[in-house]
Length: 171
Image: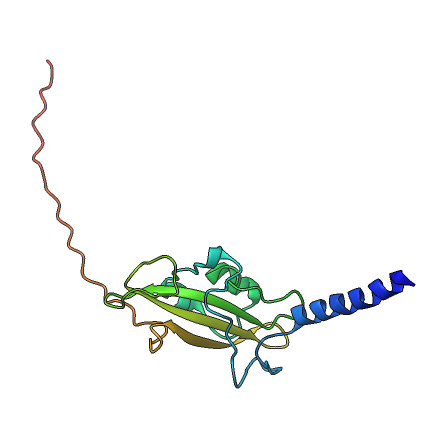
């Protein structure tokens, strides 16, 4: 009798845990859109030790509808948050961008200044193709995500031409 009293609640807790791992956080429609994207807490990352990453603008330019999860994994890496185990239809990332004059994010333990922090969400359709992309500013709260790419400054290459000394040929 005691075993049944332990097993029944244990199975209920196990089933609830499995089902919660299957659920997406946002209400994702079959076409891969959502009216209200839900972002996880910014610094509750599962991977990268609560740090996030610094993507390049070239990587972000490659993001477009129709990419598979494998494509996105190759471009941006694994999602930074624990998204669940089965039927995952959204991936979340925490990105940082070097932006002079921003200050220090009080919630970021790195203490590095001049960094804009944004969350990025990729939402997949029922066939697991990326369809929607959403940004959420973290710091500063009113940031433009992603911030504008810095203007490339022309590079000047200076070469010093040293005249070669004439070589003596032995006769």
